[in-house]
Length: 91
Image (cartoon, rainbow, N blue to C red; front, side):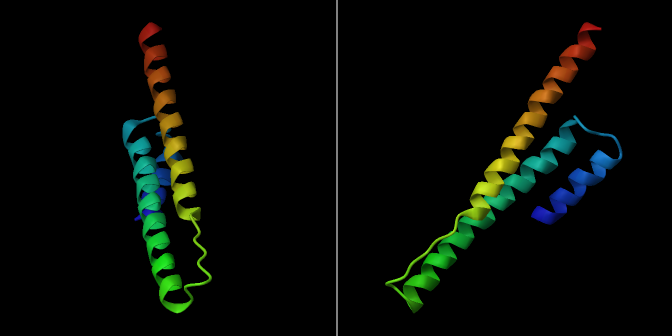
């Protein structure tokens, strides 16, 4: 789902729909899915480490961090969309 939303996002960018609501929604969805995937990865890693080597538990939250960054970028795109709409109304 992350890859599909990124594909949709980049195809809309290619078509010139930079600051449109649907484009931003695809990026937000990719961030949400990536955060969810990262959380599932943390749970599975901790479960696996507990079963096979309880003394050496290491957890990686890379997916969660990447998802938050993508979600933040989507928020920036949303703010840019609002500024663009305001500018179009004042002209």
